[in-house]
Each structure stands twice: as C-alpha cells, then as structure tokens.
Image (cartoon, rainbow, N blue to C red; front, side, top):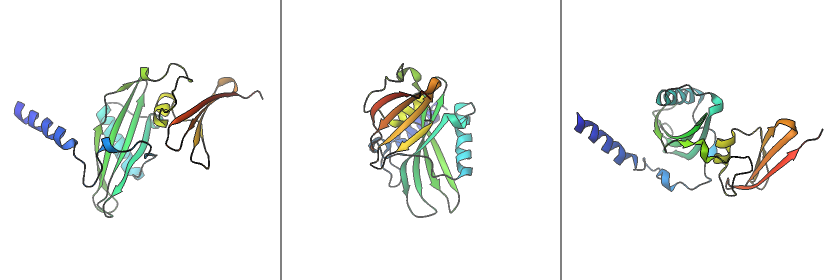
Length: 191
C-alpha cells in the first residue's frame, strides 16, 4: 500500500511538471497575458465551482471567486485545451488553482483542478490602502481589496480600479497595459 501511494505521488509530481500537448509550462507564462473571465460555458463553470467546493470543503460565493484565462485554446475544434487561473478569496486566505480544460467533442469538456501555491495569507496584503507598491499586479490588488466598484479603461491600454468608500472617498489605482500598478490616488466627493 505504501509503495502504491508513493508511486502515485511520484507520478503526479513528475507528470505535473510537463507541459500538456502544446502548452507552455505554467512557470514560463509571461506576466500580463492573462485576461479576466473564463472561456467555459455556464454549465462547465458551475461544475468546476462544485469541484473546487469539494476540494476546499466549503461553499464558494461568487464574490469570493476570480477567474482568469492564462492560456488560450490549443488544438482543433472539439479537442481543444486551455488553462485558467481561478482564485478563491476567503476571509483570511487566498488560494490559486490552475484549471486545465480539455474538450471531449463539441459542447463538452473535462477539467483538472491543481492547487498552485500554498495559501497566501492576507497578512501579505498591505496594512493600509496606500501601502501597495508600484509594479504590483492588478490581481494582487484585487485579491487584497476585492472586485473594484468600477474599472475605467483608457484608450492607451491603461486602466483604473475605483473603490468607493464611506464619506465620499474614492480610491483609485492606475495600472499600465502590462497590468502593473503605476499610481494610487484618493479623492473625496464633497457633494
């Protein structure tokens, strides 16, 4: 029994490092190539969410789940593969999961859930809203502060996350087209 478990773990560790049929290994994906959202249909999204809930052992509210496409589909229609990063943000921890989708004919797909890193404890988030450093990713800001109340897209590719706070306070985080934080500002609406 011990040998079977040891072999299975060794096999999973060994094969988990290989790229999947034309995929770039996850460690080689350039930063800034991800796009928020999912390529999966509603039914598949619900199936993956149910699978994540089984892995976590707890329900996941939609406000606690962030989805990002990190590798576009590869292969012919009906047998495509693609990868997404799903981030689950619970009260004091954030966990990232790599979801690998594999089409099995038109209109259906299998998926594999892989935990990416050890839990990132919220203590890594800054203690104040102005504590983020230039160059930090949009994902890190979103994980720490939650989904912005509004995203303002500029024609040059830059964009701003706006978070509304009590007493007319608006926090703004400006990101480059490479999804890196470049500026933080606070405004107060006196109307």
